[in-house]
Length: 146
Image (tube, rainbow, N blue to C red; front, side, top):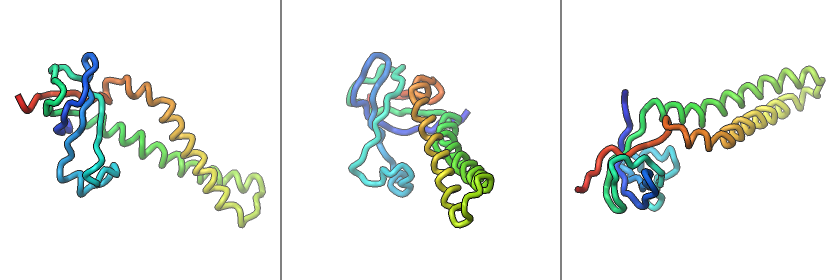
């Protein structure tokens, strides 16, 4: 099983969890996929702290590739498929409703946007369940500055 590993600094602790600030690599500055390309923005996440790292320590965190791929699928593929399904259904429904031909495409676009919005709403409403899932939980695997 493959894992994505990043360096981070522990900024707070609560029980067996730690809030860490991810140290972005030079690859982050080039990628900008998460809109954190500027040096001023930081990523803070809560992770499992099974190694009992303390505030201020530099640590290595990891998340399984399977979890990363699943999260990407949830956030990108499901809304995209929902949008396309909405557009196709909107075109078919426009024909059924005998909507003026000039309004078929705008109607299908709005239907697609509605379906995509509903997909994002479903993801948002299930966010707490995703957060509780151990699959999506990063964890500290190593303390680097002992």
